[in-house]
Length: 362
Image 1 (cartoon, rainbow, N blue to C red):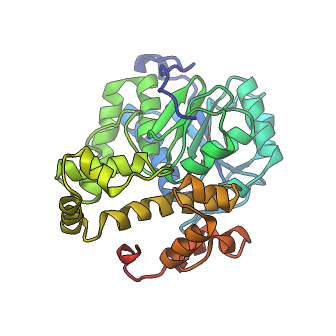
Image 2 (spheres, one colour):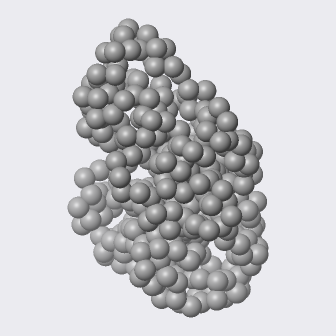
């Protein structure tokens, strides 16, 4: 469910820098889910490290945890050493070293990840007033733990269709990060830097954030409601406003595709003019590009949800499951059923996509 972004509230008190000299550091715990994304994790940690450098004292202290305390491999193949575990952190909730925030970092195949101890710990964190943040695809974990009931959140755009289908009661949007009370969610990637800069700004103000940006060579801090994906003009290198309007209409009508004639009429052009425009700007026909958009959404739903294939076909504008299966195989080199049978993982899927020009698929 997609709703308007709420007022950005938080229990964090804005603190004066002079107050904090000699005070105990603000503690943040990062929990790494197997196949987490190193970019999002390291960006978040670096903000805290640079905050300490800019302020000139240890304003922040962090720990890195995993389920049992061992090393965790990121999706890029590198491993991160952790210095804490769930059992240790559950005990620390009632000690002086209790964290102010827990950040869950996740990425690949999060839908199948399950940890009852983790979910119990997160509920305990909420009960104790500890802020909980989900980075990348970790909104899935927060939702499983029951932390997103009546909470606005975000998730990486690629996981958003499947998440929306599984948790229809959770208001989710495709912004870079979202703050609703003590629940912080972030789309991952470089957006974790923006979210953590927002946290530092609430604690220590704009001047500290500006100092961090200078150190990190960051030109500006993005607002929470900025879009995750590139604007069409940058994604395709398109400046033609008619093309942009046509593609936006296609994206908004995937379940019930508009005819090329209707699209052309909406911009006061003929079908032939639209055909020439797409060939000139994108090197393919509007019908081919439209089908590519629908198949991309179908791919997301296939890999992220348990929705029946026939329902996915209908949701993506195909007249039948057989028509959808043929189009899918022609484009990706495998049938939808192969993914559902567990023969192909999310990682393998992208490696198996044919290298031939997909634009020629009609």
